[in-house]
Image (cartoon, rainbow over all chains, first blue to last red):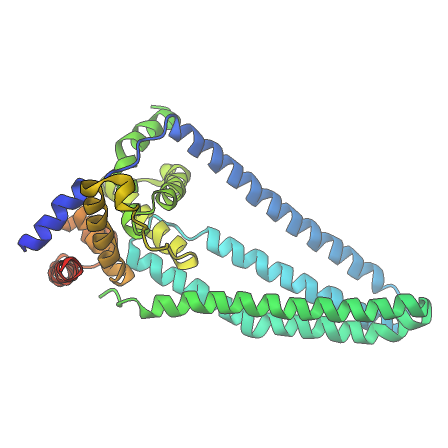
Length: 189
Length: 161
């Protein structure tokens, strides 16, 4: 254990950065900034949901069944995804860092497992229903817009969908990596 | 005492303990350690109202620090510490920096939980409080700590040969 005592005495001799002047004031200021940022994020999500619900009510007034179905699928899947994300974020923010490490790890693991359900099931489901809604709308677009604009809608939509697939895949891989790292750690007792 | 004054005292008394711990998680990278320490104290401030004196304030803060470092480092891995060239910093300082680099590198090889245990031990936390922070029994901690110390000592010795 002499070796470890040597390590411990070296540990104590390390250079430790100085206490920042008025550091505590910056902490309080940053905490307020983060709280506001979170609040604005929540407000944006809530406003998005309200707009989508209003739009949903508006389009349900249309007598065109194809239009109603297409728009309902598109708006509905967006609404669903926004609400799921809102609750997921709320869940993460509510995880108390004051818990014992074992309990905190268990809660974080449960959170990431719930994210897997979102990524493997809910996101593909809402993405697919959005695309189906869009495809249902295509004949209506063709009828009401110029050929040029119609082609632009098709091409830009394909590009956006491909981009979203890549983005979602990257996000899933990142969160899977976190879960695998957590599984590799020696279990706590 | 008003919350801000209370927080100022807590911050000044615990800053060096927290940043000392965070340095161990990030291979000695001072910039990353400062960022982590900032995160930790933001959470201390946000949760201060909920502190109920069921543990000492340092134990409570260390719990937040370990959980925060765990969470952040899962998202972003620290790079190995770069040691300055011997000509620029002198023989003795170079030798010291190499020793710290070896120590941090060996600590980094441990699993996340073992890393936390040994860092708390190096920070001179009583073992009963370490077991309280991690959430394992005191007996289990003692056995585990003995193994980690051997592992670390062996690694540091091998690095230096």
